[in-house]
Image (cartoon, rainbow, N blue to C red; front, side, top):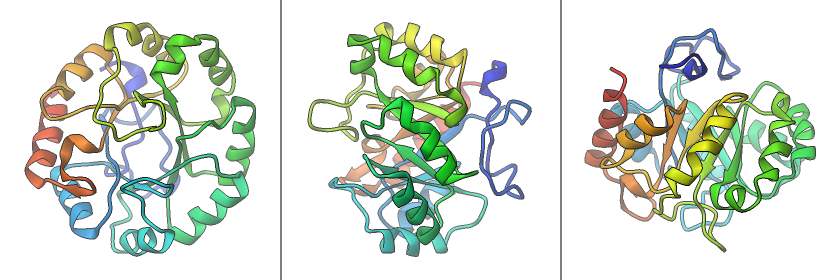
Length: 246
């Protein structure tokens, strides 16, 4: 594992409250199971070995209300990271949302411009801040990446998703890995990278070997149906991911 893969792993460093990724910590692949909709699925993800759970708090087939997310989060151990996935909210609204629900981090999954990221950092303080970028957009407009990398001090990592027009995530579609490899290599020179988009137990090991990311994120690849996790696929996904660098 490369030095940039030394992420903050909440299960090893649960006594710290900030949940930031630090270069001096143990090299552990960060695995986030996103679109958690119920407590049973949350426990199944943690039992399988996930570091973080994602809660979609924006219009989506897997959307939770803030109250529903707060109820699940309240029943989880402090060692797990609780990441809220949001789209085009104000920094002030996200600060309130995080305080009300117990989120330890936010994933900005919308069109949040790079120049606004310092406002999100100030509002969210020490909570982990992840910016999602759509790979198809970066491939079409490489200059967008420069603008986000220039704001590196305002976020903790970049998540690369595939996305399709009208659907920002959870599509089950991979992006063009070969075309995206130079993008990932550029980002890794500045910030931790999380790979998402169409990952499954069958391809996550290939993604890790190709990109050597700091983390991976999955939704549909571990579901029985939309919004309902498959415990067997959760275990298979995390075992395949962990086995690459074991």
